[in-house]
Image: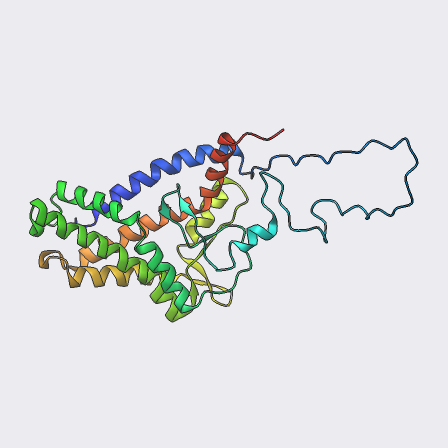
Length: 288
Protein backbone atom coordinates (compact mmCIF):
# COMPACT_ATOMS: atom_id res chain seq x y z
CA UNK A 1 0.00 0.00 0.00
CA UNK A 2 1.29 3.36 -1.01
CA UNK A 3 0.94 5.11 2.34
CA UNK A 4 2.12 2.33 4.63
CA UNK A 5 5.82 3.17 4.52
CA UNK A 6 5.22 6.76 5.66
CA UNK A 7 2.86 5.73 8.45
CA UNK A 8 5.17 3.00 9.74
CA UNK A 9 8.29 5.18 9.61
CA UNK A 10 6.61 8.09 11.35
CA UNK A 11 4.73 5.96 13.83
CA UNK A 12 7.70 3.88 14.96
CA UNK A 13 9.91 6.96 15.28
CA UNK A 14 7.41 8.95 17.32
CA UNK A 15 6.29 6.03 19.47
CA UNK A 16 9.90 5.31 20.46
CA UNK A 17 10.54 8.95 21.36
CA UNK A 18 7.16 9.18 23.09
CA UNK A 19 8.01 6.22 25.34
CA UNK A 20 11.21 8.02 26.38
CA UNK A 21 9.22 11.19 26.99
CA UNK A 22 6.64 9.39 29.12
CA UNK A 23 9.43 8.11 31.35
CA UNK A 24 10.84 11.62 31.65
CA UNK A 25 7.38 12.96 32.52
CA UNK A 26 6.94 10.34 35.24
CA UNK A 27 10.33 11.14 36.77
CA UNK A 28 9.62 14.86 36.63
CA UNK A 29 6.06 14.34 37.96
CA UNK A 30 4.83 16.87 35.44
CA UNK A 31 6.16 19.78 37.46
CA UNK A 32 8.02 22.74 35.92
CA UNK A 33 11.59 23.33 36.98
CA UNK A 34 12.04 26.50 39.02
CA UNK A 35 15.45 27.03 40.67
CA UNK A 36 15.27 28.82 44.03
CA UNK A 37 15.64 32.56 43.80
CA UNK A 38 18.63 34.04 45.60
CA UNK A 39 17.90 35.75 48.90
CA UNK A 40 18.61 39.52 49.10
CA UNK A 41 21.59 40.49 51.16
CA UNK A 42 20.87 42.05 54.54
CA UNK A 43 22.89 45.08 55.46
CA UNK A 44 24.38 45.19 58.94
CA UNK A 45 23.11 47.94 61.26
CA UNK A 46 25.27 51.04 61.37
CA UNK A 47 26.99 51.86 64.63
CA UNK A 48 27.26 55.59 63.91
CA UNK A 49 24.19 57.82 63.85
CA UNK A 50 22.90 58.24 60.32
CA UNK A 51 22.90 61.74 58.81
CA UNK A 52 19.68 63.57 58.14
CA UNK A 53 19.02 62.07 54.73
CA UNK A 54 15.92 60.45 53.37
CA UNK A 55 16.48 57.11 51.75
CA UNK A 56 14.07 55.79 49.14
CA UNK A 57 11.46 53.41 50.51
CA UNK A 58 12.24 49.74 50.03
CA UNK A 59 10.85 48.26 46.84
CA UNK A 60 8.03 45.75 46.90
CA UNK A 61 8.93 42.10 47.23
CA UNK A 62 9.48 40.07 44.10
CA UNK A 63 6.31 39.24 42.24
CA UNK A 64 4.19 42.11 43.64
CA UNK A 65 2.60 44.89 41.53
CA UNK A 66 4.82 47.87 40.90
CA UNK A 67 8.05 45.91 40.61
CA UNK A 68 10.17 46.60 37.55
CA UNK A 69 10.12 43.91 34.89
CA UNK A 70 13.15 41.87 35.99
CA UNK A 71 13.71 38.16 35.90
CA UNK A 72 15.89 36.19 38.29
CA UNK A 73 18.43 33.80 36.71
CA UNK A 74 16.84 30.47 35.81
CA UNK A 75 13.30 31.85 36.00
CA UNK A 76 10.86 33.14 33.40
CA UNK A 77 8.52 35.95 34.32
CA UNK A 78 4.83 35.61 33.51
CA UNK A 79 4.93 38.66 31.28
CA UNK A 80 7.87 37.26 29.32
CA UNK A 81 5.99 33.98 28.92
CA UNK A 82 2.88 35.74 27.68
CA UNK A 83 4.91 37.77 25.20
CA UNK A 84 5.86 34.60 23.37
CA UNK A 85 2.23 34.20 22.32
CA UNK A 86 1.50 37.74 21.20
CA UNK A 87 1.80 36.60 17.58
CA UNK A 88 -0.61 33.73 18.23
CA UNK A 89 1.97 31.08 17.28
CA UNK A 90 5.24 29.80 18.72
CA UNK A 91 8.79 29.08 17.60
CA UNK A 92 8.96 25.76 19.40
CA UNK A 93 10.34 22.57 17.87
CA UNK A 94 9.58 19.01 18.89
CA UNK A 95 12.84 17.50 20.12
CA UNK A 96 14.56 20.70 19.01
CA UNK A 97 14.05 19.80 15.35
CA UNK A 98 10.50 19.22 14.07
CA UNK A 99 8.38 22.37 13.54
CA UNK A 100 5.85 22.81 16.33
CA UNK A 101 4.62 26.32 15.60
CA UNK A 102 0.92 25.73 16.36
CA UNK A 103 1.29 24.43 19.92
CA UNK A 104 0.71 26.94 22.71
CA UNK A 105 1.76 26.35 26.33
CA UNK A 106 -0.33 27.82 29.16
CA UNK A 107 -2.14 30.17 26.78
CA UNK A 108 -5.83 30.20 27.53
CA UNK A 109 -6.40 33.71 26.15
CA UNK A 110 -4.80 34.57 22.83
CA UNK A 111 -6.18 36.52 19.89
CA UNK A 112 -7.63 34.49 17.01
CA UNK A 113 -5.50 33.90 13.95
CA UNK A 114 -6.45 35.69 10.78
CA UNK A 115 -6.68 33.78 7.51
CA UNK A 116 -3.36 35.29 6.48
CA UNK A 117 -1.69 34.13 9.68
CA UNK A 118 -3.03 30.60 9.21
CA UNK A 119 -1.54 30.40 5.73
CA UNK A 120 1.69 31.98 6.92
CA UNK A 121 2.29 29.45 9.69
CA UNK A 122 1.36 26.59 7.35
CA UNK A 123 4.00 27.86 4.93
CA UNK A 124 6.60 28.13 7.70
CA UNK A 125 6.12 24.55 8.79
CA UNK A 126 5.72 23.09 5.26
CA UNK A 127 8.98 24.55 3.96
CA UNK A 128 11.02 24.40 7.15
CA UNK A 129 14.60 23.22 6.64
CA UNK A 130 13.98 20.02 8.62
CA UNK A 131 11.30 18.89 6.18
CA UNK A 132 13.73 18.42 3.28
CA UNK A 133 15.85 15.64 4.82
CA UNK A 134 12.72 14.14 6.44
CA UNK A 135 11.02 13.64 3.09
CA UNK A 136 14.31 12.34 1.74
CA UNK A 137 14.24 9.56 4.33
CA UNK A 138 10.62 8.71 3.52
CA UNK A 139 11.41 8.58 -0.19
CA UNK A 140 14.36 6.26 0.46
CA UNK A 141 12.15 3.89 2.47
CA UNK A 142 9.55 3.97 -0.29
CA UNK A 143 12.19 3.15 -2.90
CA UNK A 144 13.59 0.29 -0.83
CA UNK A 145 10.08 -1.19 -0.55
CA UNK A 146 9.43 -0.46 -4.26
CA UNK A 147 6.26 1.34 -3.27
CA UNK A 148 4.31 2.51 -6.32
CA UNK A 149 6.30 0.39 -8.83
CA UNK A 150 5.31 2.66 -11.72
CA UNK A 151 7.92 5.14 -10.49
CA UNK A 152 10.70 2.63 -11.16
CA UNK A 153 14.11 2.56 -9.49
CA UNK A 154 17.32 4.54 -9.79
CA UNK A 155 17.73 8.29 -9.46
CA UNK A 156 14.61 9.04 -11.49
CA UNK A 157 12.43 6.79 -9.34
CA UNK A 158 13.84 8.31 -6.15
CA UNK A 159 13.22 11.85 -7.43
CA UNK A 160 9.60 11.02 -8.21
CA UNK A 161 9.06 9.48 -4.78
CA UNK A 162 10.72 12.45 -3.08
CA UNK A 163 8.48 14.90 -4.92
CA UNK A 164 5.40 12.82 -4.12
CA UNK A 165 6.22 12.61 -0.41
CA UNK A 166 6.90 16.34 -0.23
CA UNK A 167 3.71 17.21 -2.10
CA UNK A 168 1.58 14.84 0.00
CA UNK A 169 2.80 16.35 3.28
CA UNK A 170 2.54 19.94 2.06
CA UNK A 171 -1.00 19.60 0.69
CA UNK A 172 -2.19 17.88 3.88
CA UNK A 173 -0.59 20.58 6.05
CA UNK A 174 -2.24 23.42 4.12
CA UNK A 175 -5.65 21.76 4.08
CA UNK A 176 -5.62 20.89 7.81
CA UNK A 177 -4.08 24.08 9.19
CA UNK A 178 -4.95 26.83 6.69
CA UNK A 179 -7.61 26.19 4.02
CA UNK A 180 -10.40 24.52 6.01
CA UNK A 181 -9.78 26.56 9.23
CA UNK A 182 -9.90 29.79 7.20
CA UNK A 183 -13.15 28.88 5.44
CA UNK A 184 -14.92 27.55 8.56
CA UNK A 185 -13.22 30.00 10.97
CA UNK A 186 -11.78 27.36 13.27
CA UNK A 187 -8.55 27.48 15.25
CA UNK A 188 -5.81 25.08 14.03
CA UNK A 189 -3.67 25.54 17.15
CA UNK A 190 -3.18 22.98 19.91
CA UNK A 191 -3.66 24.30 23.45
CA UNK A 192 -1.63 22.27 25.93
CA UNK A 193 -3.55 21.11 28.99
CA UNK A 194 -0.38 20.94 31.09
CA UNK A 195 -1.93 19.45 34.24
CA UNK A 196 -3.59 16.28 35.47
CA UNK A 197 -2.64 12.63 35.33
CA UNK A 198 -0.78 11.06 32.44
CA UNK A 199 -3.88 9.21 31.20
CA UNK A 200 -6.08 12.30 31.53
CA UNK A 201 -3.71 14.41 29.47
CA UNK A 202 -3.32 11.66 26.88
CA UNK A 203 -7.09 11.35 26.50
CA UNK A 204 -7.41 15.13 26.23
CA UNK A 205 -4.79 15.37 23.50
CA UNK A 206 -6.34 12.57 21.43
CA UNK A 207 -9.76 14.21 21.76
CA UNK A 208 -8.33 17.29 20.03
CA UNK A 209 -8.37 15.28 16.81
CA UNK A 210 -12.15 15.68 16.87
CA UNK A 211 -12.64 18.83 18.97
CA UNK A 212 -11.12 22.23 18.32
CA UNK A 213 -11.98 25.88 18.93
CA UNK A 214 -13.71 28.35 16.72
CA UNK A 215 -12.08 31.71 16.15
CA UNK A 216 -14.51 33.08 18.74
CA UNK A 217 -13.30 30.58 21.37
CA UNK A 218 -16.11 27.98 21.40
CA UNK A 219 -15.66 24.24 21.01
CA UNK A 220 -16.60 22.72 17.67
CA UNK A 221 -15.93 19.63 15.58
CA UNK A 222 -12.40 19.58 14.16
CA UNK A 223 -13.30 19.84 10.49
CA UNK A 224 -9.75 20.92 9.69
CA UNK A 225 -8.25 17.62 10.84
CA UNK A 226 -10.92 15.18 9.66
CA UNK A 227 -12.26 16.92 6.56
CA UNK A 228 -9.03 18.68 5.64
CA UNK A 229 -6.86 15.56 5.74
CA UNK A 230 -9.46 13.65 3.68
CA UNK A 231 -9.55 16.39 1.05
CA UNK A 232 -5.76 16.50 0.97
CA UNK A 233 -5.56 12.73 0.47
CA UNK A 234 -8.07 12.88 -2.40
CA UNK A 235 -6.29 15.80 -4.11
CA UNK A 236 -2.87 14.15 -3.98
CA UNK A 237 -4.10 10.66 -4.95
CA UNK A 238 -6.12 11.69 -7.99
CA UNK A 239 -3.78 14.36 -9.34
CA UNK A 240 -0.16 13.18 -9.59
CA UNK A 241 0.06 9.62 -8.25
CA UNK A 242 0.37 6.75 -10.75
CA UNK A 243 -2.90 5.72 -12.39
CA UNK A 244 -2.75 2.28 -10.77
CA UNK A 245 -2.92 3.91 -7.32
CA UNK A 246 -5.74 6.31 -8.06
CA UNK A 247 -8.40 4.31 -6.23
CA UNK A 248 -10.86 5.06 -3.46
CA UNK A 249 -9.34 2.41 -1.19
CA UNK A 250 -5.89 3.94 -1.57
CA UNK A 251 -7.30 7.38 -0.81
CA UNK A 252 -8.90 6.06 2.40
CA UNK A 253 -5.62 4.39 3.35
CA UNK A 254 -3.69 7.64 2.88
CA UNK A 255 -6.34 9.48 4.89
CA UNK A 256 -6.18 7.00 7.77
CA UNK A 257 -2.39 7.08 7.84
CA UNK A 258 -2.30 10.87 8.02
CA UNK A 259 -4.85 10.99 10.86
CA UNK A 260 -2.94 8.29 12.77
CA UNK A 261 0.30 10.21 12.34
CA UNK A 262 -1.39 13.40 13.56
CA UNK A 263 -2.73 11.51 16.60
CA UNK A 264 0.80 10.51 17.60
CA UNK A 265 2.11 13.99 17.05
CA UNK A 266 -0.66 15.70 18.99
CA UNK A 267 0.05 13.53 22.05
CA UNK A 268 3.71 14.53 21.77
CA UNK A 269 2.62 18.16 21.66
CA UNK A 270 1.02 17.73 25.08
CA UNK A 271 4.05 16.17 26.81
CA UNK A 272 6.94 17.77 24.97
CA UNK A 273 7.19 20.75 27.39
CA UNK A 274 7.58 18.30 30.29
CA UNK A 275 10.29 16.41 28.43
CA UNK A 276 12.08 19.65 27.60
CA UNK A 277 12.01 20.80 31.23
CA UNK A 278 13.26 17.40 32.39
CA UNK A 279 16.38 17.48 30.24
CA UNK A 280 16.92 21.17 30.89
CA UNK A 281 16.95 20.41 34.61
CA UNK A 282 19.54 17.67 34.15
CA UNK A 283 21.87 19.93 32.15
CA UNK A 284 21.43 23.06 34.27
CA UNK A 285 21.85 22.35 38.01
CA UNK A 286 20.41 24.87 40.46
CA UNK A 287 22.59 27.87 41.22
CA UNK A 288 23.58 28.30 44.88
